[in-house]
Image 1: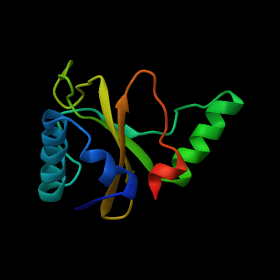
Image 2: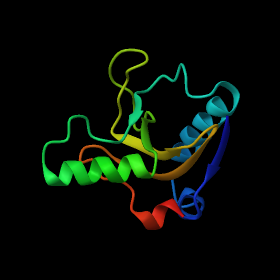
Image 3: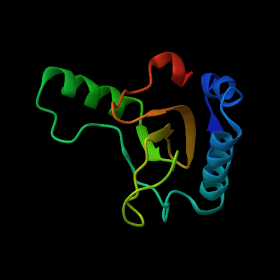
Image 4: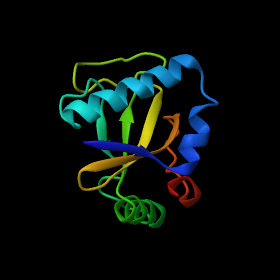
Length: 120
């Protein structure tokens, strides 16, 4: 699977600590070699399940429209069971046909979808 970055993420990457950069590079290498199956951390669509409120429906539509997903990258560490491990930081990306575009990294909770400016 091909992995690329948004312009925003390309700039952001070099401001991150060496540890954070290495976790991201490990993710990129794994996905390039194996695709998204078999990842250690939780990997899921960023569209809220069963959106009930107007805001949740708007977030659902936004996440669906922009193919947004997030992956628990293991920063600072993983917690939980294999294949469903979570971490404080998530890597936000767009999942397109046979490529993904890294767009942001942030803490969770709270969970905030990347803005349009970060997707370019």
